[in-house]
Amino acid sequence: MAIDLEPSWLEVLQNEFEKPYMVKLREFLKEEKQNGARIYPKNADIFNAFNKTPFNKVKVVILGQDPYPGDHQAHGLSFSVQKGIAIPKSLQNIYKELVTDIPGFTKPAHGNLEEWASQGVLLLNATLTVRAGESASHQKKGWEVFTDEVIRKLSEQKKGIVFILWGNYAQSKLSLIDQTKHHIIKSVHPSPLSVERGFYGSKPFSKANEYLVQEGETPIDWQIH
Image 1 (cartoon, one colour):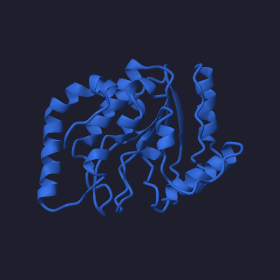
Image 2 (cartoon, one colour):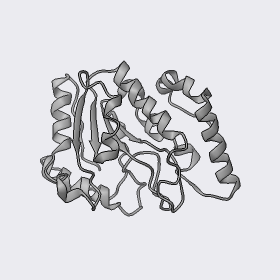
Image 3 (spheres, one colour):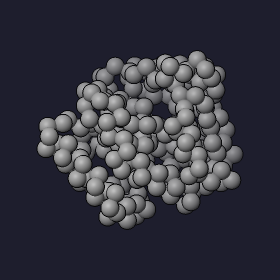
């Protein structure tokens, strides 16, 4: 796992890569590959969220749990899939909410969310890799220690970030965020299992933009083209 990280993130996170948990994580990933496991996303995309959204540009964080385990789905951004791949159900539900939340939003034909990332939306999964076909197979191997530190650093070193936390797992990270400096938007997860219990109508996207305007920031154009 080569560390090819955008410079502003590398400055903030450099020390993490030498820590024992990260050494162990690298060993684990090496063993997985030696044992013939296919790992998603591909190596070059593991740190995509950071490379597409530099530390000094982060305005919104949308926290996911781990990458999609299907072929060609994951490309390092939470909830996002590559163009040409069927839009997963959770993302379909996110698009449905956007249609009712953002005036004029039209449902995109694909699930690639890079346009959000380029505007300062950090699409961060708590776990950054997964074994093909096996959801959650790389949880508790060290990635969460790393991404907890990412959240902590954002909380400590920046102000006015909007953290969008869907579901119990994302909300378990609340203790890492200084809520006197940052804005929290939370609801149930957009997955088909919980979407009807309060995700629809929660208006996270317009709320995020209201907070950004309060902070003197440019709001996000949520339309995906």
